[in-house]
Image 1 (tube, rainbow, N blue to C red):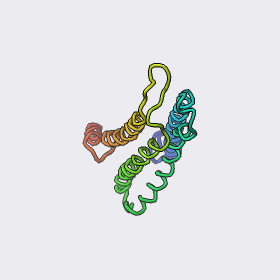
Image 2: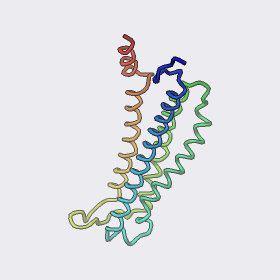
Image 3: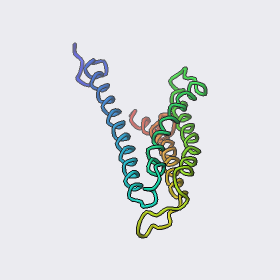
Image 4: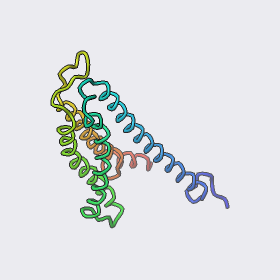
Length: 176
């Protein structure tokens, strides 16, 4: 038919690009899940190594409860999207995704504070050199990770979305 291998009208080229994108997304999802599972397991090991946290089931379950509550908050965020963000055009998708990131971060913040207050003793030992760990240290570290994720999401969007200047500038230079 006279089509080049990389011609966008070539069905094989389209199928190859779709497969590449699906593989990239699946790999990224697997990496994110792996990171979350590894973080949860590491926190479980730390909790079991603490002589004070070993005494309370709630303290032992704290990392798992954070992860599980994140799933619940994610479902609530999806329900909120249907109420708050109507998607009628392709441009609405980007706005909805950014809004969902903000909603989930805001909803998860009081959940983390509550779980930290309920599950962790006010002061506990993590072993030699860390005899007086305050429970709010754990709260702050989880919240820093949560809000850092929001910041990374915004920065990533700025540098990868066609809505903002950096991507449009690169696209302009390629037109020559």
